Length: 102
Image (cartoon, rainbow, N blue to C red; front, side, top):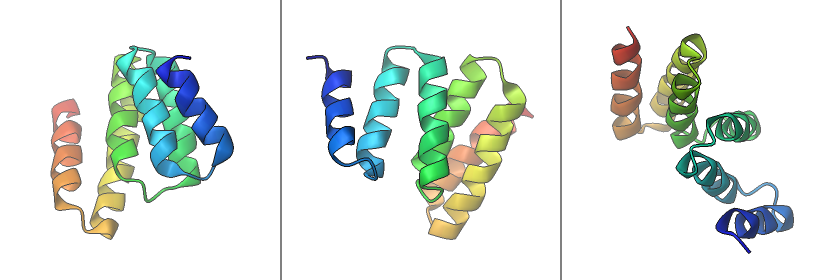
């Protein structure tokens, strides 16, 4: 069983577990499956808009897919989520990513 299959099995057992869902997203990105990662990250954000780390990775995947406006949107929404969560580290990373896109 691959790592992705193992994570999918965990997710089937607990579909509401954002941490496991994020692990699955990261497996897609590690495999450079940007489209699969983008879809999975969008689903995670829709299910759990407070999962701040997902916004940065979703923006990164959108950039890899040359969907720059989508990337800007993810970064901007992530900045708002990071502010609400009081996560200064994520806020600075998201702002830096957005600044790079101009």
